[in-house]
Image (tube, rainbow, N blue to C red; front, side):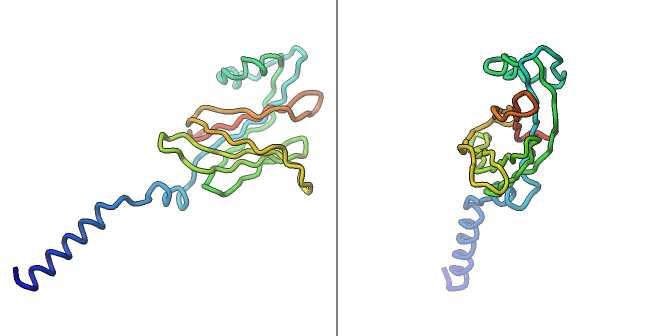
Length: 162
């Protein structure tokens, strides 16, 4: 093999090795793309008998304990978010506190690892940080914040456009 042919052969092998190397495309796309769609639903739940917002009936978790103790549920707000890795997003709650949602990573199986906390602006009293691994389209709930004679239930659903 002459010197020029050998160089071309080595260049071709090097190009094939580089082309076949795994690229961090999903991470790059997540960091620069539109993000992971998410929806935060804030519900006021009360133990007194009353109406349950029809849009909540499809969320089966709300009909099981501990949520089944509430006999009325009204949607106070719905907010669309776009989450990016390691970039917390804040959602103001009606009781003056703030929900913080942070996408930590997309798991190899497509689920999402997220961190959620609730704080009071201007104070260092974050409620315990909660880490959740959630499947796309499967909401998880954070509850316990008192408001207007009831309890706020906060639903977070990731990965499905709403």
